[in-house]
Image (tube, rainbow, N blue to C red):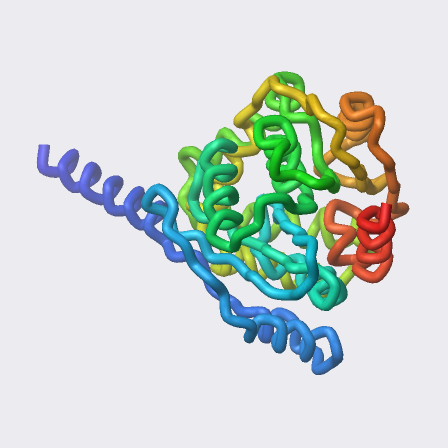
Length: 301
């Protein structure tokens, strides 16, 4: 009996240790040691103070900058934050008002939309151009479907149609997040960045450093797992009014394979389409100048 108690105590200790291990932390400077214009400009961009707003017990941090009669709302994906759009924001802020939030640990599309609407209300913006990628592109579709009155135009970047077919494929990938310890989820995230997204992007060193920083603590495991539930939060209502749309995709997107890219275009047949060649899942990071030019042309239309 004494031996059993010892074994049980050791087992519990090992389990608690396994689940309680901290996620290692590294910042951008350690991951991108180059002293070049990219690092200098990015670090300067991060000095811009953020705004904050509490919505349903969650604190939303967001950037509000720029000038102009029209406003752009930038929506990031699962593995990112407001500053993933920094190169587009810098290029556009002299001509547009820009709002770029970071999602807190919210696990439903309606919850994300509620936070976005509260930020827009605080910033006195009643109608915006919505630009979203991946999960952000999913959220952009949700806003077009459920809150079309706020959307002047929309960009669905490197994203998918949120339906039962997509959920059936994505759910097994995310199921482990429910039980995995946070450090393990972040390790798997970083592994995917190094082995899949970095080569798919054309080996963009900035992309690698930025996304690894997210996996090394800039993004919490709770934020990451809750964003996964948002990806799986499907909805049926489709675009029902005339909103100018642009679909941006990559021909080698490792997260959105060809059948899902084609389904997105079939769902929105009136949308303009731009296809990057060999740019991976994050073309706004790996090919920022071209991505910004495409956005400018869309906004001029």
